[in-house]
Image (tube, rainbow, N blue to C red):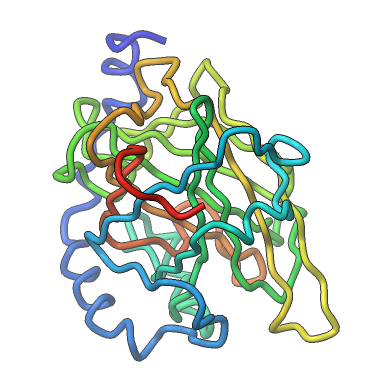
Length: 276
């Protein structure tokens, strides 16, 4: 897929529907402390807010996961853990008005860990979810999670990119297929599957008799070096990054999701001290 193809295709679609959503986003952010669900907080992790920088951890030489994307590997107990709050995405289509049903207006915490070896970068995410939703039918929806990276600078819109000149790379895992898709977008409605599906992943749903202790765990990884025009280049000083979660039992799907409402900055360098 060439730059010209994407410019003339789906990534060049208009994002005019985003007009006016920033005001709504500001209102939601202002009330986030009131709406957030704090039941899944853990005092042993660091809270990450907008524009904070998170430094990637190094996987020591000679240490390997049991399988390439094992979400329950012991190495995760040795690496720093972070959490950030997700809020309902600003509505860019009339169908996402459903998010304002009772329960779906509350914020949600997602926990994450980011580590790299010389060859590969890993992201582990987990979040509380009392319901394991794997099926997508007419009136049921599967759970999902995504990580989004701006291919350029922080002035790129966090809402699926700005345009074909300021796109984003998205790693999207969904429970109904239990696979990770490598995507690009340059504005609302322009999401495109990339020809190089270099991102791999694995998941586990942790059950418990106590619904509040049930959770999803998902690991996604990719070779550190990029392999295409719309694959994020990790060899940069900082990379704007964001997250999204779809909770099926809240009827979340497509643009109806919970997201970080601006960028978190990822430092992938191995310079300086890192916690192993």
